[in-house]
Image (cartoon, rainbow, N blue to C red):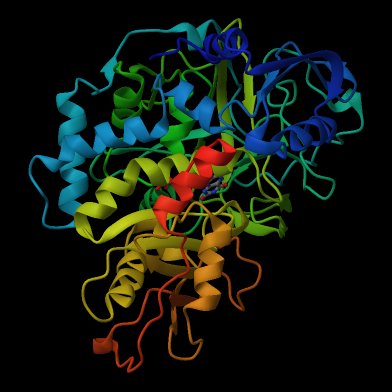
Length: 511
Ligand SMILES: Cc1cc2nc3c(=O)[nH]c(=O)nc-3n(C[C@H](O)[C@H](O)[C@H](O)COP(=O)(O)O)c2cc1C
């Protein structure tokens, strides 16, 4: 199901009873976070919120703010026009099963071909609603000009009120110690200068002033690789950041697709309609014609990196300032009825748990093609994505759990995983209590764990050096004789099924 705009998606949520409208003025500085955090912490993720009168330094913004629109299993499924995320995953898995691939790379290539066959390839159109209002900026400051002073967020006099600039879009200051305002659901388009391949990624944007921002593409991400090629050649790197449009755009931007596979293909497949792309005003990059906002600009490799952060991050801690490239705005365009999409991250559970967990469900069939013994994978909310992975396997030979740990650490963004717990096929990895029971009961710590080294999430504050760290795997499966386990493995206590049925008949309810 395709949505024409973020507003269209919001109306759909409203009609389904999934939206709470907040008509009172609420400050983009911390207050929206406090309300959204309370909602996201409700069981199942709460409702989506629409702030109709967000204020910027006390002034009501012309654009409403929507938040937590993907923050539940129900809304994730609705955004895909499906009954459940599992149903979408099953269909996607079926697409690639016709010809079993020999490797992960081949699996992803087949996935790309399969998506293409479903007419998901993006189309170029001449214009679109994202250009209802166009604001081109004057020539950017010279490369040697010193940094302009950061605006004082408490002083309305520093706000530029001419529409639209970075200072009058209702961009949130999320947490008290944040270094400023951050665009938290930005879809960032870059291009490989060598191959022309496009990438869509979600990398947060810190507003420095009305026309410069930080862009937080981390070391191992695709846009950072593109950036390095521009730094090598010294050429300016065009970057386009868009917000809103179909909710499958931000979802696809976060999906861990391999470098070179166009995320717009995935978005087109999931919304069952090819994405219409329009050329930017000030570069040759293309963005969805139906986006709500487009912020165009460039990164200049000649310019030194600038400190970005602190930012209250999805790790539950503030990420401390680190140097990142500076993005210069050359144009901002938007729909007349634009809705500003936002999220907040922080101590879990938050909206991003559902976004990440839906990705894991969609890509499970791809993992299973490489590792057929994998039954299920879960990234529990407490692990904030990269800290903890639970995986269940159908174990048939000795040391298979270790093969899976090493295999996962070698697959794309799974490289960041700090702890992997492997359990048997009959353990429900989505039930953290059940997994912990087996971890504690079924392991001898020294024998059943392994510590190794590798790349770490740059957001991990606990590693001694940024971006590198250690990993631990636990084999919580039943031990086999072939693994040197000489004793008999005892049976797990389970009631006789016939008794359960008789008791269900007496008490009512399920057996
Ligand atoms: C809400 C949200 C915010 C994110 N912010 C960042 C970020 O600031 N920097 C980053 O490198 N990744 C961030 N990510 C993760 C990336 O979007 C994700 O790793 C994506 O697959 C990167 O795309 P790429 O593989 O094309 O580089 C964020 C994810 C979510 C859900």
